[in-house]
Length: 354
Image (cartoon, rainbow, N blue to C red):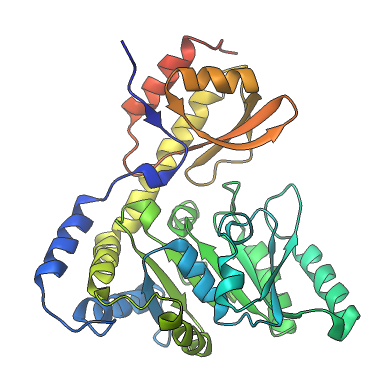
């Protein structure tokens, strides 16, 4: 009998939370103004101001993470400028040149290390190196960090604070790619959204809901109004001024209501911890990086990886190292204990425990 395929390599295979589906239906039946002037978007802005404890922020609701990141960066990245980010960051590795495209030719400059996160001392060294070269280099416009980082680890408060201090010294904007910000936030509970962002010096946050229960909803939160003004110039030009904005904003309203966004993320994180514990018992697998959100990275031989695929288990192939590979397991708000147990039962047929 053919075993059912289990897709466990990304949280984007998950569906939509019932509360959000209901909100979409309600918004669909409600007649209100288009292009972000609707009652749902206005409510969303009030909600975000309350959650982030800041009355002078501005928001733009979006449909995709790539567009959100690129539009956020375009608010301060100019065609003659650059943004410093980690080499493994999503904006550098996975967005098809969109940040450069949205900014009319701006450049991404990368820092590399095995940590997966920008180190303040490396950032400072890079800035000083660029400034030493002077006018022959592109102008530094800002810095982008990812929370959670691409290897599933957290930027600590001290790490962000140190990076922010450097940004303020050199008058650079600080952007946070928060595709899994909710997972990062609940893992640092009782840290508030404000304490994790603008109180540390973050100027804009792209907050992702699609990976965590939404149908298609992202939001750019500008803690600096000047950046929001610049971004809005690009909104129509880049084809992301959505006529029926209410459908996006309604999803976000349901997502924020009664802490649904945090509860869904907490559930996913708990399942990742459970999965990590189970996977660590197999001697063929080497767990990489701390599991500080909903991702587990595992190093194994190519043979082991192929055997996993034969069991109809599909993690994401993340990296190749000689005769080894690194794969990523990702849990979501829909991942159940039974599903994880089924994965482990299948693995038990091919792999030996420690």
